[in-house]
Image 1 (cartoon, rainbow, N blue to C red):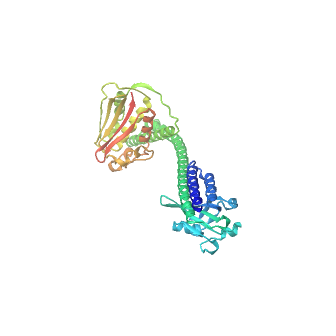
Image 2: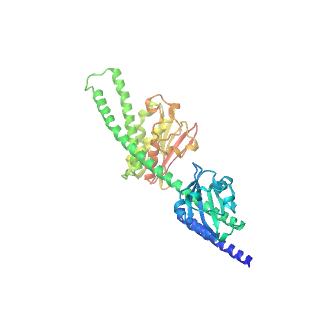
Image 3: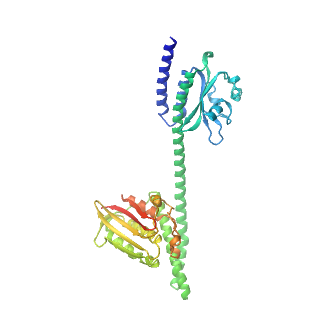
Amino acid sequence: MDEVKSSALGIKRLQALQEISVLLNSTLDTHEVLERALESATGLLRAEASSVFLLDPVTEELVFYAITGEKKAALEGFRVPKGQGVVGWVVENRRPLLVPDANKDPRFFSTVDRKFGFQTHTLLCVPLITKGRVLGALEVVNCKDGGQFSEEDISFLETFGNHVATALDNALLYRELSEAHETLKTLDEIKSHVINVVSHELRTPTSLIQSFHELLKGEMLGALEPKQLEALERMEVGVKWLNRIITNVTNVALLDQRQAQLHLQSFDLAAMARDTVAEMAPLFEQRRQKSSTAGTANKVIVEADPDQIRHVLHNLLLNAIRFTPDEGGIRVILERLDGEVRVAVSENGIGIPETEFNRIFDQFLHAQRSATHSSGTIEFMSSGLGLGLAIAKRIVEMHRGRIWVESEVGKGSTFYFTLPR
């Protein structure tokens, strides 16, 4: 008869474990369902109360997290000092522990009983372990009717604890990811606000400098000596450089906030490529670099925003000029493919490690500094803010195109982007 009862109990517990597993995996908000699962396990073990303790990773204290029984409200959040009590021993040793008489076991932490008016007689505790990491412990206390917990009870509680540990691990991971997401979202909002403020505040003094520069250059404030004219030419380079930075910062802020709008029209991309290279001739000459185009002899009509695509070409060419040594070569190539046009900006500069291929399109990032092959002019003595490629990527993707790089360290790089035809 006892065997029949034992077999029936085993089947009942197996069914309960299946139901508990489904319950625990039904949501990532585990606290409420965990207490429901504890109620089920407590009943099957004929226990008076049960608790799940979570290990605080900072203080290593054990915190009452989910509780059943009369003292539930009082105990929730109470902390057991590191290494104290049966639960502390179980966590440190990573082994289950059956205590038939708590008052005779030196490991028993009687403070909880004294503080909350409870009386513990027997208890069974198992560690909650997943992926080799201890999350806490699961404890049931006081077998009803004066009985004792058995070896079968240990086995059942360990299996139940495995389900609890998995559910807690998933919930904790989800919470960590959610918190990280919110942190990144907040940082992104702060970054966009700072960019907006900086770009706005820079425009006023820059406009003032530019106005006085034009007055001086036009000799409206008096005749200038040759050295003064030379100084004004250098000032003009600096003002243009600063204006490009402000434009890039403003553009990335607009793109971040999805405020930039495309004004689509048909235009000749081949002519735009030729014109953009021609417009940048002074910069090529400054670095004594050779520039050329290929595939631009005939018209290549695309439907896109010409101002934005010109900005992409300009940024890719500036990037090529910056990271190509003096007297290097830069080439713009257009190819007609099925359903799209592919543009390549190729140079024989310092190259990019393959590990950086994706990261270089992030804001405020450059794979390498350009100072190692600087021309010595202020225009190219630093790597800049790292916004040009990020802006180019977003504009191309807004046009439903793709952008990528192929490169080999020491041999140069080719940046490609496509536009639908």
